Length: 303
Image 1 (cartoon, rainbow, N blue to C red):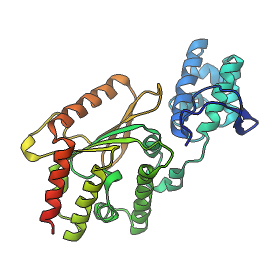
Image 2 (tube, rainbow, N blue to C red):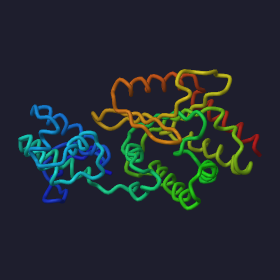
Image 3 (cartoon, rainbow, N blue to C red):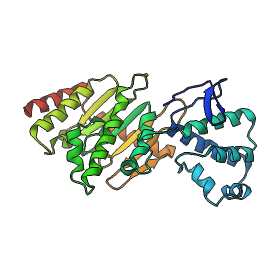
Image 4 (cartoon, rainbow, N blue to C red):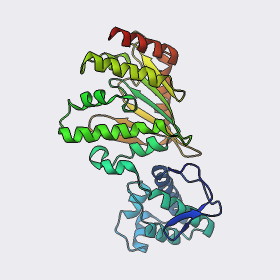
C-alpha cells in the first residue's frame, strides 16, 4: 500500500518516479477519493450524469456507478474520457490520472470474493490510521484466535470449505498489526462482558482466546475497553459498528454490520453521530489498564 506518497507520475500504464503531483493512498482510498473528485468535476461543469453518458456514448448509469464508488477497478481509458469531457487542466489531469492508477492496484482481499463479496471493509481497514469499533456480543475479528473464528462460523450455514477460507481471510486481515513500514493503525476496540462469557469450544481454547486479548491489549497501538454488566445499558449498545479514520484530509466513514450485510455510511452527520455514540460507550467502559486486569483475572479462572 502507498500512503501519502508524492513524486510519482503515469507513463502509459505504469507508475514511475517524477515530479510531485499529489498525495496518493492505498487502492481503496484512492478509488473513494477519485469518485468524490469526479463528482465535483461534473458538478463544476453543470452537466448531469446522464448528459455526460450521452456525450461519451455510454450506457445510462455508468457515470453514477463511478460517482457512487460502486466500481472495482476503474479503467484508465474511462477516466481519461471523463477528464477530457470535463476539460480538466493539465496539472489536475495528471494528478487524477495518477489517482486512478493507484485505484487499480491489486488488493489481496479480492482473492476472497466468496468471503467478502463486494464489501470494501478490508480495504478501509488496511488504509485506516485509526479503527474504532464496538462489538456488543462477539469479539472483534482482528483480535480473534483461529479456534474462536471456527467456533463462531460453525453456527452458520456455510459449508466447511468456505469456513476455512473465511478463517484464512480473517488471519490475513490481522497481518496489518505486523507491518514493519510504520503504517500499523491504532485500534480502539470496545467489547462487552457478554462476549467473554459465551461457552464455545474447550476451556483451554477459551482461555487461549482471553490470553490473546491480554497480549494484544498490551500493544502500544491497541486500546481495548470492556463494558461490564454492572456498567449498565447505554445508547447504541444494540449496534455493531466500526469507524475508520484515514490519512490526510480523507473523510472518515462508518460501517454497520449484521449477519446479513455490511452497510457503509459516508454522510458526515451520520458518521459524526456514530462517533459520538462510540465515545459515550467507551467512556462507560473500564479504562485500558483495568480492562487488561479484568481479562487476566478471567483467564486465571479458566485454568
